[in-house]
Image 1 (cartoon, rainbow, N blue to C red):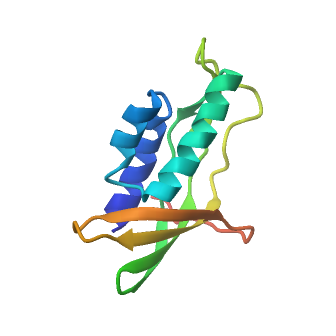
Image 2 (tube, rainbow, N blue to C red):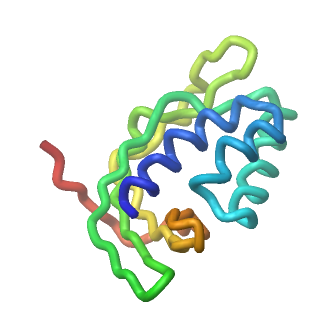
Length: 133
């Protein structure tokens, strides 16, 4: 399940640069339809503004609680290698670089096809600190 969560972050950045239907196809194995729709709506707004995600995030899963076909993963994500960029030039917009300690609650769903998919993300206001090697 943690692998599916980490993979979601890789494909979500890729999906942001694709046409909507291709974005759906890329996200389908990793994200529930409702979450996918919300993400692609935000992507569309960014595209209309001429901006795009840049870089990558690193998930640091701190705990996982599984309850049947659902789970909650707490992540202290390192987003310090991610930012927002201008779509035409891919130049990072000053002041948009992420934080090294973003506390996230990820609700996951285990679907009948055997895959864990992201159902909902919540940025938590409580601080976190990831153990990094």
